[in-house]
Amino acid sequence: MKYGQMYMIEPAQLLAHPLVVVPGFMSDGRVWEPQIRLLSRHVPVTVAPVLNADRVEDVAASLLVHMPEKFTVVGAGLGGSIAMAMLQEAPDRIAGICLIGSTPLPETPAKAAEREPWIIRARSGRLRGVMEEVIPASALAPGPLRHQVMGQLADMAEDLGADVFVSQSRMLQRRSDQQATLMRADQPGLVICGVHDQIIPVKRQLFTAELMKNARIEMIEDAGHLPLMEQPDRVSAILHNWIVGEHGRQPEREETLDPLPEPVWTSRRSRRRPVAVETPAVDSTAATSEPVSEDVLQLTSEYRASA
Image 1 (cartoon, rainbow, N blue to C red):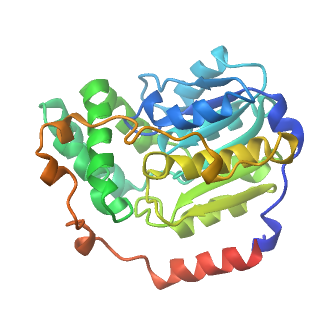
Image 2 (cartoon, helix red, strand yellow):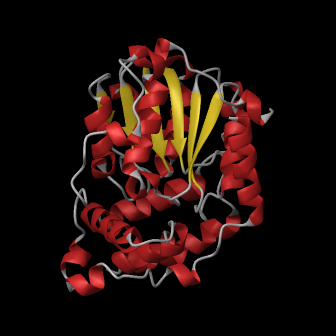
């Protein structure tokens, strides 16, 4: 599929159905607060809990029992895997699908093996430190928000606990290949990609968008693997224009969104640190982060030229 063929205007069908959002790995409904505040003006919004199970397909089947008859689904990370499993299980019930920092590919044996020591350490009470390795700071966009986002993610992980960490790790290890599911899909599709994502790189997310017949991709330059937390206003604007678009009063721009409190919540780790350390003038992790490759920059420029 050519880049120019990927950017289509979705029909009004998305506006006619409820929206279901699925959190990512060790996340909960807090990450969706800005999107709920904006999108609930137009469609009913439900946060689907990621239940304890060892297989993505089992979670998807359980959730489908309680979901609306037909709905648009947005999944981030692991939530995207669950969204794709819903699409595989009940394609006629999915009005549209959006994937944020997700992939249809199964986990490699090497990555699955890497999770085993993390599981052992999480069970022994070291979950917060483990999370800093599972989603390292280098997977986020450089900048002063890195420390805040890492703290918020660790807070959610501690609230969910080690048992959920083990369960969700097993889901990732055992997730199925969903390439064929996306290739069969006729629904409107959207991929939201952070340019600095080193966990699901840009090339892989471009590939995901190309698998779908009626999909587009939106790249966020100042985000990495967690666009929902790094650039919530930008994600809100993208989702609004995808779901509502021309069919609402007017498309939303970032500057017209309701102002959000800064931050949406403050991490417990940040509250334990002096203010001078919490907001450094220079991001000390930026120098050690892997720069965005020339290939990614070229793909981004091609995307802009074709949009």
